[in-house]
Length: 180
Image (tube, rainbow, N blue to C red):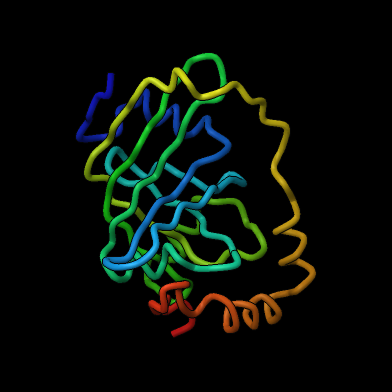
């Protein structure tokens, strides 16, 4: 049975902090829905109504473009271990970039990871849990280091050039404002 909450309870906050993977869904007003898996110790509970995640360099920058257009975002986490649970966080998100006043405050919540592009702050409006009885068991064996190694090898200038070429607009043509 699905259950809704207005805020993140202590139990749900603990569940979030124990997960190694989460999924981010966003969509423009008109265009493709984007769903991305995330990992690398990049999600933080800020308080009972706010979370933030470290957004690392990727092939696209869909979520940032969608958030700039309408702010809508859903974060989903699910248990792959003994106790089944699916947790969805519905809210309004915004990208925080190095040029923004809140950057240092939010960056301090995360480990330093090469290729960090922005931080996404989400004001949680609604929380839903559901059973997760059909989610299979999986064991976490470690984070992939490929993205981190790629960014370290490229260096700051090379990553910036990659952003200029690949992260300035969504696949539907919306601006990301990454480098403004």
